[in-house]
Image (cartoon, rainbow, N blue to C red):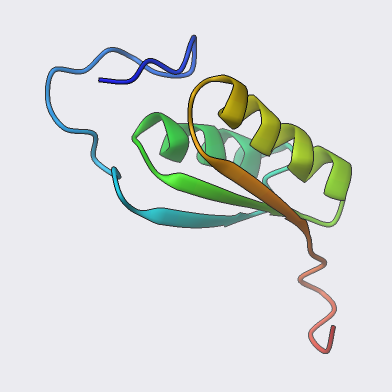
Length: 82
């Protein structure tokens, strides 16, 4: 299993979310950040979305540095028309 240096427990079985894509809103901090890291730990490719684009980018970078696949975008879910 791939080890995500501190983000991942070593597992003997296939990762639960291997081959899946997870789009996580609010992933720049708090619960959204924890969810993004947890999904990455389980093998998902992450798209980190947050109103604070720098925070979303930091989440994606953390995942990438640990051996996962993370991407980021700035998104304000309150702005429906944008």
